[in-house]
Image (cartoon, rainbow, N blue to C red):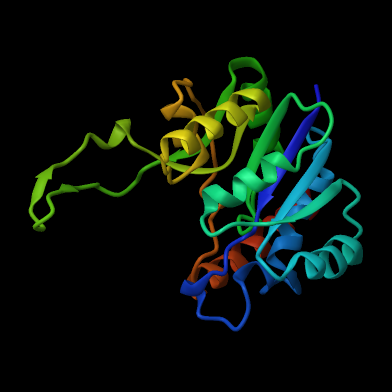
Length: 235
């Protein structure tokens, strides 16, 4: 089984309020994107990696991250699009050669573990589509356009989506083509697959697998990284 990972780091990250895209900010003295790639580089379930970079940053990623930190699995760095969906599509098209499963992961989720990646890839291989997710712990309200509560969904039936989201390569390519044909916009890759009729299997995620979007997220990630690093060294 040949598995690619598409690491989506094509956004600018305006909510962070930094002078550079958030994936290049430091986490434990290395760029966040480098910390994310470290996990996939060490994971035996992944054979090759495509990185999607923001417009104008492709050469920087190649030189300052891929080459500098020796990420041998990274085969291509390509430019992303205006929306995440466009960036993922660019990454999927950059996959060359045989590919059975593709794991799509946010470049700013550096605290993912190899164990979760492996489970995601295996489920996708067996069932076609896998979504890493965690139970929702807050009460969720469904509201109307004028700000009134319509109803309260049963919390035990709700999950918060994370990444990686892994798929049979042909399945997700066809799903993206169908979405483009219909001008359908999804908020994640699972929704694109669902729209095309795929049944997506949940893979238990981890609370630490946060997406670094704000300054508060980065502070939390530093603490979580330190804790996970210490735990790994004790093992």
